Each structure stands twice: as C-alpha cells, then as structure tokens.
Amino acid sequence: MNNNTHQHTNPQPADDARLYLAPAKLNLDLRIIGQREDGYHLLESIFTLIDLYDRIWLKPANHGQIVLHTPVEGISPEEDLCFRAAALLQAASGTRQGVDIWVQKNIPMGGGLGGGSSDAALILMALNQLWQTGITQTDLMHMALQLGADVPFFIFGENAFVQGVGEKMTTFSLPKQWYVIIHPPVHVSTSEIFAHKSLTRDSKPRIMPVFQAMQHWQNDMQSVVLADYPVVRLAFDELARYGRPMMSGSGACVFLRFDNQQEAKAVYRQIQNTHQVYCVASLAKHPFYS
Image (cartoon, rainbow, N blue to C red; front, side):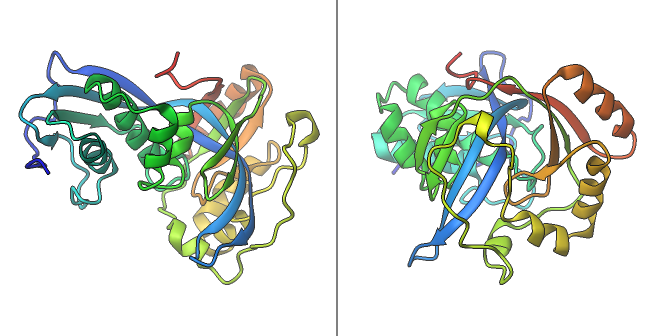
C-alpha cells in the first residue's frame, strides 16, 4: 500500500486542479420492508438528484499519496469518506498515482441529503477517469457499497427506485420538480434511528412504482425522528402550512415538493429569514455524466 498521508496544507485549490460537482439527493419515498440476519435493513426508496452541490477539486499527482487539504474538524482520515474512497480505488486498481483533494461543503452534514456519500462517489468516478484505472461503472458501484449504502446511487447517476440495502437500482422517470428544503440545526444519527425500537420494519413492498401512481409518499423513519427531535418537528410543522412535507432519509432535512418554480420560490421567500432553507430543482442526470 502506498504511503498515504492526510495533511492540512492549503485550503485553496491549486490553479491546475479540476473542479467537479457532487449533487445532493432527496428520498421521495422510503420504506423499510425487513431486516437481514446481519442487522442490515432492507429498503425500498425513490431517490432524486437535486441541484445543491458540494464542490470538489482534484489534482492527480505522482507522489503516490492521498492528500486531503480540507479535512473536516474532528474526523480522522480513516473516517473521512473522500479519503477512504480515494484509498479504496488506489488499493483496488494497484495504481501508484496519488491525488490532492479540496472539498467545499455546501450540502449540510447529517441532514439526510447524502452529501458525504455523493462526495465519495464523485471521488471514485473522477479518479477512475483521471488515474485511467478502467474500472466499469457496475464494478465501481459494487465497490462503493463498502463506503455506504447511498454511495452506489450517485455512481448510478440518475433518479432511481432503490431496493435491497441500497445496491439494486432501476431507473425511475420523474418529471421536473422543485423543492423547498429546511435544514434544522441538529445532526440526526442514522444508526440511532435504525436501532430505534419504534421503527417500522415491515412495510409492504411495492412492485416497481410509477410516478403518476405514487400520490401517497411515505418515509418510515419520519415518525421516529419527529418524536425524538423537537427541532425537526418544528421545521416540519412550518412547511406543513404550505403543503404535505416529508423528511429525507434519516433526517434532519424536511422538504416540500412543487410542480413549478414560482410556487417553490414564493414559499422559500416566506421562510428564508427564520430557517436555513434551500430552494432547489431536481436533476435528471449527475453532472459528471452530463
């Protein structure tokens, strides 16, 4: 294994580093339909990409090391998903190349928007190209499961009906949508919610759904989080004044869906001064593939 390092050297990206966009996601529907013997939960979810991005700069290097110039405070390199993704690809491909990485976080952490997973997926996709390691998209997705259940989706790169523990994906056709998202000032622990005694674990599976037939969206984690996190409940109730909100993933972000941008912007303007709020559009494809 190469001598990987993790240094905080220069938070400004090098002039010749390449910029990539890592989009966030929303879970439009999330059902827990069972649990495997190993403790992993079996899920069914509909994921959509949205135009809220982390910005990542990469500069391939001959020094063989992985240098993350923008570490997150309190997270060691072994835990950092960007670092782990680069190290995983380096080990799997046997390349002697290294990389300098700079990350600008815009997707809130611990919000259920998949920012860390998206960053890791982007690192795998971009370095596979930059290092010319020639790993197929399918193999990259399989590898990505080691980093987290949501990572393969971002490599898949389009809206999807997701099953299993996150590894089975079918393209899901969605009309263009707009979302108003509130990020409450709290970090919800996914593992804590999965372990919760009140969590529903026996939702009825769907056959491959179609958008038109899905008027009743649900998130099996929502009631648990709303009961345990008053600040998430507050944000949820705020959005409930304008429609039927939902929580994304294991939270904490809650969102409201709109068919047109004008309506979304009107609600955004009503609440932008009292909450950390985003007004975003759905994406049909990951920018890496566009």
